Image 1 (cartoon, one colour):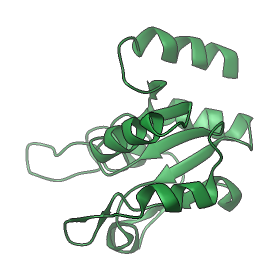
Image 2 (cartoon, one colour; image 1 turned 90 degrees about the vertical axis):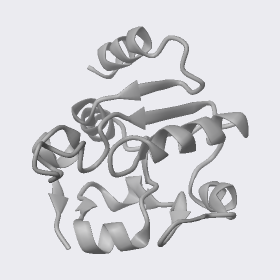
Image 3 (cartoon, one colour; image 1 turned 180 degrees about the horizontal axis):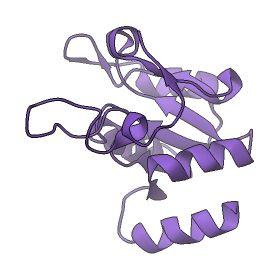
Image 4 (cartoon, one colour; image 1 turned 90 degrees about the horizontal axis):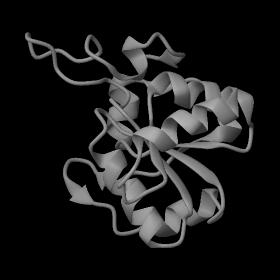
Amino acid sequence: MTKAIFEQIQQRSAGLPYAGAVTPQEAFELLQANPAILLIDVRTDAERDWVGKVEINPAQSFAVQWNLYPTKSNPDFLAQLAQVASKDSVLLFLCRSGVRSRSAATLATEHGYSQCYDILEGFEGDKDQNGHRKTVGGWCHAGLPWRGA
């Protein structure tokens, strides 16, 4: 199954500045199939505390903030990433809606991490017509394991 997922990812990922983009469901399947694959949650600590967290094997899930709450860039992002992942690790980057995770995957790739993937739609997905999240795309909307704050 993992090989088939990576083939789909390659087809959709041509031209990206990192290894590829995965759907939340693909990310979950990859994490389940291979305990060496890591999920890097780049949301702020406040987002994880107030909104919720992915619930998977704790040995596969790490918080490395892209920004520090409320809006300051994390100057130690790469150093903190290096504490939890090697340059040849398969890394699945997750944020709220898929924007910061793309930036994190790009930066990590530029610094020698060879297998960086963006999780499309993020944890909460885009806003719906009422301005609410978790109803249009994302890890939560896909019904994947997570726990609230």
